Amino acid sequence: MSVFRGPRRTAMPTTEPEMNTGLWMVPYADLMSNLMILFLALFAYSYLNRSPEFDRAMQNIESNLAKEHEEAEAAQRLQEAQLAVLMRERLSRLALRDFGVRVSARYIHLSLPNPVLFPEGSERLNPSAVPVLAPLAELLATVDNPVLIAGHTDDVPIVGGHYRTNWELSAARAFSVIEFFAGQGLPPGRFQARGHGEFRPVAPNDTEANRARNRRIEIRLVREVKKQS
Image 1 (cartoon, one colour):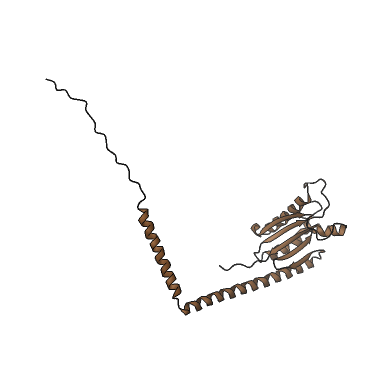
Image 2: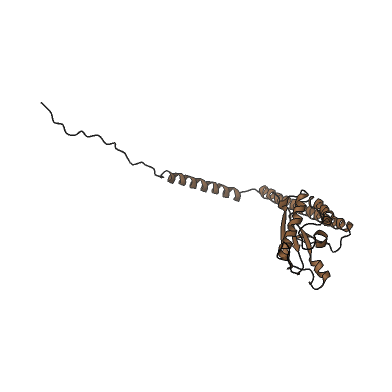
């Protein structure tokens, strides 16, 4: 005798939805907020009830820091002034003409005539530039101030040659001076090159003598006081 059996049912696995909520962050955030409020309250209480000795100690610290900053600034200013004097002495020994050294609140400013450094229309240094720039490299190595190198030209247009404008030529000459200083061991990161072309003359471009004054390289040592760490 056969017994009829219905189709066999397989039990389907029951899966509960995964609980992945961030409800735990609510009490955690409340706890952190309460702790922050507690510490702020403790700090405010301690500040309001600080002793006179604490105030005097803070004033002494501030006074000492200000005094050290003033002494450091004075020492740096003295070193920069001595550097300017040495630059003038070194260049005077070379019997250069039309060079200048002056000191302002922001810079030690040195101006060199282009004919001493470069051939006409070229950015390559003359051999005669080495005795001029080498002593300056030695002096610049005694400090770590940033240095700006700027090239200037007269207003006579360039005809032919490698450069299209006086602007390009003046910038290339500034880079040549920086490359020389870098070759003398000075960190290249201290230098910035600028090319002004004929747009910042020191004299009218109406005579050959004035145009010669406008063809120049300017070296500016940035005077800055180091911040106390």
